[in-house]
Length: 631
Image 1 (cartoon, rainbow, N blue to C red):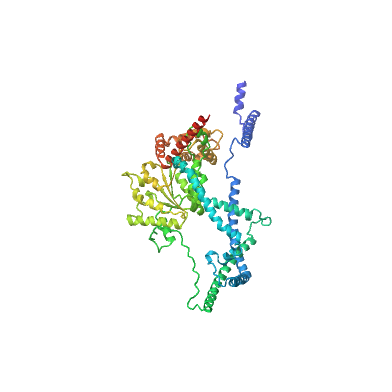
Image 2: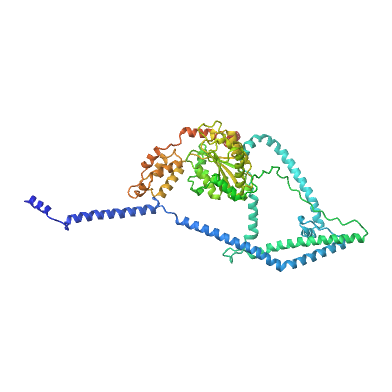
């Protein structure tokens, strides 16, 4: 009977009805889901609070605010500079109108009074010093300062100082003669890496003195907006106005003295003998460069037409805007520990980024640095495919706003054919690069012009620029903000002697280390929203140890398709997915690393460094032996 009743109940139409047990089951499942969701949220908030998880990627508000402040400051600086320049011209005009006649009359009366006193005292007319020597200002500065004691001191002090210098030099030479003979070999090895005196030291000293004299005790409480100081401009312009007026008055006095001298000679019956006009001493400059000026093959063409031609032929190329800080890499922090263990520390990608800033970006961005720092005409960036060589070139151009000239053999093939065409190409590149400074002349596959044997499949004629590369590089002067950059993935294939003649600095990009790989994975996964607690970044960095950064980014882009990115909220990214993509890509093999190490060990910079380390080790051993002998 029970079974019959249950069958009848099942057969009834229960639409719109629900048993209490069903409602209880639904409530239990729903409440459990809500509780688990709230617990997960609280756990995530706690992990974010203690820094165990990273928040969802969004551009930092502090960085956005800092960029806005930088842009505001640049605009404000331009506005203040415009106000300052307008104030310079307006204040100068006002001072000329107010004080020009008074200063002219005052200086004229002073000069005439001095000339009369000089004539009364000596019976002769004086000669004013030339303008190059300071004119009447130099004469008045000397007058009244030569007392008897001072003249004796001034006469005796140079002789005594010279004698003392000679005696000191002779003593130093005698005492250091034996030391020089003993340490000659040491200096040859150590000189290459010895830190020379900076060319900017005097500028720093002058700036510090200016700060101490002018700005240190300057009251700027009332100048909150940091506008120009009118009193300082007036003092500076008054000195300039006085100098200009004095030069004019001096010239008038010279003509008056010449007329007076003529009248004086006639009165003394010296007819026919005119007063000799004081000859101006012409300063001869130093030896000019005997460098022949290159013939301009395009004298009648404008810069715009030359630029348009190079753009049309693909020599001047656009480039993506890249910041140098976007080149991900950690600096080496274990150098001293590795040296203590007897190992040679290798640079990291962060060190390479710093070298590019110092050798390339800083000289191109500052004309003062370019003219005073050691001249670097060319740099070679070598590294495996995917190591970021082109990215560094684009970052250099982006940071300084440079024009990029592409002289890659594959880019210039078929362009400007023949010998005359090649001459015109070199002329256009060198001329336009100087006119549109800063400029970067780039050559990819930099080893190909110096390869002994060109493969038959290579139709780019890479040896076309072989003889002219050195000419282009040596034509870069210290005042030219032009840099020649070569990128190469196999520089050992080239003739090394010619390669070293072209490139003054060689930067070898190493394989990414664990710190750089961890930083890259953290930043990229966080930016893509794929960073989850279940994804072991440390393990991922270990697995990808033998790959370049470029290869890893390609693999990550292949994994995170649009469909997969939408599924990240439901199904988190795993290391296995990335490992599958990496398995189909080539790592840096041991043979390639051995070839790089063998080539790098033969470069002039590395050989000098090894000789230095060997010499320092020998000196340390000698010191240890001396200490042991004393004990």
